[in-house]
Amino acid sequence: MKRVFIHTFGCQMNVNDTMRMSEALASMKYSPTPVAENADLIILNTCSIREKAEDKMLSALGRYRQVKLQRGALIGVGGCVAQQEKNRILEKVPYVDFVFGPDAIQKLPEILQRVEADRVRVVETAWVDSESYVFPRADPSTSRGKATEFVTVMKGCDNVCSFCVVPHTRGREVSRPFTDVLTEVASLTTVGVREVTLVGQNVNSYLGGISFAQLLLRTAEVPGIERVRFTTSHPHDLSDELVEAFRLQPKIMGHFHLPVQSGSDQVLVRMRRDYTVVEYLERLAKLRAARPTIAVTTDIIVGFPGETDEDFEKTYALTEQVRYAGQFSFVYSPRPKTGAAMREAEWGSVPHEVKVARLEKLNALQKRISSELNAQQVGKTVQVLVEGSSRTDATRRFGRTEHNTTVNFDGDAPIGALVQVQLASSSAASLSGKQVSIESMPSVLIPEVAAVPEVCLT
Ligand code: SAM
Ligand code: SF4
Image 1 (cartoon, helix red, strand yellow):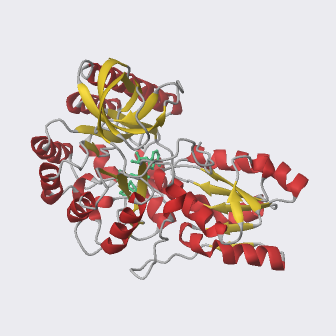
Image 2 (tube, rainbow, N blue to C red; image 1 turned 45 degrees about the horizontal axis):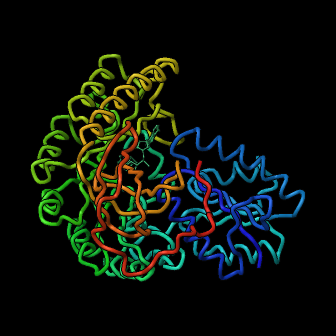
Image 3 (cartoon, rainbow, N blue to C red; image 1 turned 180 degrees about the vertical axis):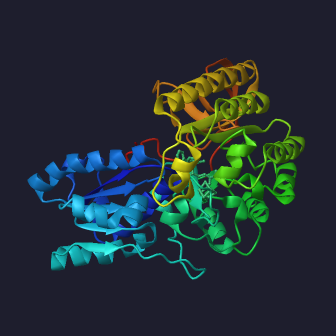
């Protein structure tokens, strides 16, 4: 058996791709190792959403060069940077053996055979931009040990947000047929998975034979599934039908990640986001009418070209007004071939120190709001799906509420149990309490020892 180490950068979609890579490599007798120094094959599954992620990938490649020198390990680069920068990687990093894009995961065995047999550098970055694209089907045994799992429902993106590299690295939107999604969800329940998160760059525009709202409702009906989540959504596709699904199906968890990006209409136009702040708030109001307790989180970019102090203050005010449960806020980073990068000189760059100051101010506000919202939960008893031992104290248990908030608690319920936890304290990031009852046990006993970690997130 040979060993593969996969270093995963970026989002949940890349984590999913890494799992599919491991499965494809199992047919070549590669088993995962968590230690790069022991590997015969090292793969970097890259992200190019921001410049920083790309820089991290290059410095990691430098570290793995030693493993190549010492053990003769093969090195491959996959994911979004590979798709967009194949020539630059091959030129700049002579010890990379192969480069493959997100649509070539299933071709990994073939690529490796060519590298090993012919000793040539292989590049495979063709896109399959059509409904004939076959999504790799997850092997449920990879998910053994987990109560919750991610399921890919679409790839690519048809939007043209001016800051975003995704349409250039992942191509056009292709939805996975709904029967395929439901079959995968059902197969995951056989190893004990009770919660699934449907993932795609813009899941609301799903077109796999039924609407996204119908897909959520059908997923919730799969026997053994107790909780359904999804990410990520574009506000202009938040349909009334999707809002209605929240009213109808309590298994759809009360958390909605709805990236707003900016609180200024002027910036939203330049970002090509297709909605105004008022329209965004109207959709949010409908959602909150359907599920009054819903937790809303968002993504925000600060320092977008031309963003004035006044624009930023509007984003700050919107954060106060919506009272997001959490947000991922980022400093704008110009990406190759994107509209905003091409027009940055015309719109005006925001100085780095101004971007950083805005980010810190926004993060401080969000931390206060998250702390306040979590503090309001103290004293309540909430449902938690047990995911394992607490990461901060192995004698305690860990899981998440319907709002996707982490809870560390005293208790003894096994992984996959749904428990009631009485909350005793809180911070901006998590809740703490004690198990008061077990609501339901998993139908499959999930092993307590976690599977060999095959990803290493940065
Ligand atoms: N599809 C989602 C949407 O429509 O909002 C976004 C997915 S994107 C992979 C994740 C987040 O990265 C974005 O919401 C945005 O806030 C951030 N992001 C994307 N491009 C960026 C850039 N050039 N600079 C900084 N942040 C960026
Ligand atoms: Fe990028 Fe999301 Fe816009 Fe698509 S919708 S281009 S993934 S930010």
